Amino acid sequence: MAPAAGQFEDHREAEPTQDHRTHHGQADFLVSYQHLADPMATRLFRLLGAVDGPDVTAPVAAVLLDVDPPQALDALDELVDARLLDETATGRYAMHDLIRLFARERAGDEPPADRDAAVDRMLAHHLDLTRHALGLLRPGTRTPPITGPPRFTDADTALAWLTTERTNLVAATVQAAGSAAHARRGADLADSLFLFFEMSGHVADWLTVDRAGIDAAVRLGDRVTEARLRHDLAVAYFYLHRPDEAARHLEHSLLVSRAAGDDEGRARALNQFGVLHGMAGDYERAAEFFKDSLRLRRKLGDERSCAAAQGNIGMAYRLAGRLEESVRHCRAAASLARRAAAPEVEVNALGNLGEVQCMLGRYSSALRYLRRSLAIAGVPANERNRGSIMGTLADAYLGAGRPGPAIRYAELAVEAMRRADFRHGEALALRRAGRMLCAHGDPGRGIEQLRLALALFTDLKLPEAAEVRAELRAARPIRP
Image (cartoon, rainbow, N blue to C red):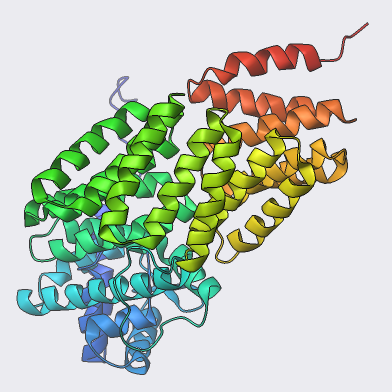
């Protein structure tokens, strides 16, 4: 007799559940873990489960184990052979997600004091290398004096290390900041990494790091570092063209600095308020804030910061149309920056000088200042600065009647702003390139650039979007 409908038995093997696969995988990992021959490999596996970050190198493994790198490399090799680690690139090792979960469980087998000491050694290693790298990339800035032998041969090597280790540094900062035992390391890492993010962009990581650092500083009761990190967070919001959030954090930074008696923090916040008013188009008010900052900087005897404030006054006067006064302040800033060995400040001052000379129709002088600025901006590379200078170079070449190099620099400016992750700057650069291409023989590519600019301006909710729409209507070829 045939079975009634709905009574057929299904003899197919049941699909394994996620929990079943996880349990089965962990059993395999446990066998591999228990068969490790070298106790150092066993301990390293536990310690890797105690740290965050996507991958690890032999030097970091050595720091965790507190041994020489060759010994750590032997332990890494055994973990790779046991399929508990993968060598994803030469000298870089990572775990699959399920193995990482298993390693986190095994980290609990490590004595807590030993585990915390290992994590602290890793954080100290990251902080030391970060400070050494930024000491080469941003000499004379807020990095503390560097001690011990150099960790990097040159600025390019330092930048390459920061770029490669960025995701690990972000993870380490967040992990440290969230721990009472390591909060000091978290706050210091966040404080140091600002200089890298200001150069390179990566604004999402920048926000993550500064928020974590602020939490750590508050936990520590360190008002000076809290004020500095709130200022840094405001600068990140400037990059995103979110002035209201920037202003909120600047207000908090200024209040905290005043309460702590921190004149340096006050000067820094006042300078950024000048930037905020400049973004709003109130250039005279911006200049007043820059002057207030300059008075405090002079009191502190900080030549580098005095040069930066003087250059910002020159920039505000340029935007206000007070061009000859702008020239005077920018020249003073460039001279002071050279004396203070502050190349990034000199770059800005020379760039502003070049822009003023363009506005005055003095294109030969503009090209001279801008070429000098670009040569300095490339060592070390600050993509946002380079993008700005290249854009002004494009304007100067066009004014001098040389559209070929003008278009080339306009397109280079787009690439630099894109690398810097500075979307407003990228939109401005795309608009410049589009207009030049439309006016000088390649309207198809020009329209493409203008459309990209429009998308960015629209996404950022900026008024330039309406202007670019009008330019697109005027540039679009009429079809028969």
